[in-house]
Amino acid sequence: MSKVVKLKQLEGWLGEVSGFENPKIKLEQYETPAHIAARILHTAESSYGDIDGKFVCDLGCGCGMLALGSTMLGSAYSVGFDVDEDALEICKENVDEFEIDNLDLVLADVLHLSESRWKKTFDTVILNPPFGTKHNAGMDMVFLKTALELSQNAVYSLHKTSTRAHITKKATEWGIKMKVVAELRYNLPSSYKFHKKNTVDIQVDFIRFTHK
Image (cartoon, rainbow, N blue to C red; front, side):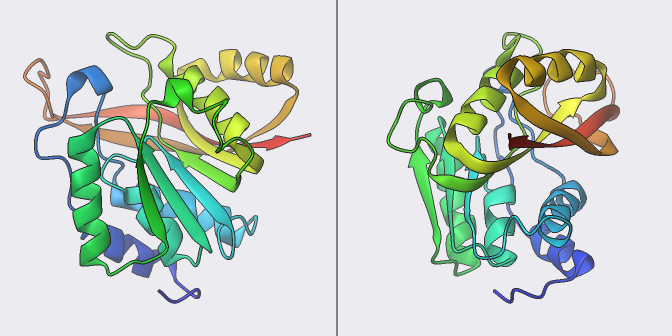
């Protein structure tokens, strides 16, 4: 893929990425919308130079939206981690469809990655973690802590704006820098039987974390 990619071009490509066929509520599987994924990745590169030529990790990659996008912006090498074999199968189909050869997929539980051989391997870690609802209370912070363990430099993550104070406190405790890059409206489509509305808008912070 070309390294010189405009935002609209990236969003167009990501709009072609195949999503979940049967999302699993236990894993809080929701696809990152193409327009949000494109803005996250494009900002990470255009404002901070954290994608092009870098080793990039997509933690909880699902169908591969962020991992694929990082390769489109010129990452030297990207890895997508996920605990769900079905999601990785869809992701592999997407990788093959886009004919990408510098993206590997790894079946792994985030809970066991922080002390693995992947520790401090990546320049940049990007994630759209479970927001910690339903049966996954606190899982967003577990993902974030693992991302920080895997990264040498920067972590980009999405978190509900309502949790900003808590995340700021944890960042201080962990000795890391935190910057809210943008406030986004995350349009969550109806994906499960218990959803009563077609879509729900959630206020989300797009945050960049860096090691001091």
